[in-house]
Length: 52
Image (cartoon, rainbow, N blue to C red; front, side):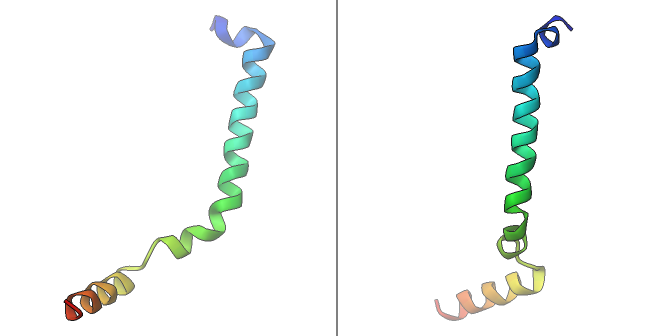
């Protein structure tokens, strides 16, 4: 693969991958609060239908 032979494109690729992992590692703490369990989702749906 000729595009990976140049240093600049290889460095950009490595930097992108490392940066993506860093962003993922920083935001992994908030994943559990954004994803509701099925029991919590059902409770929220039931409460929403009662208030309508």
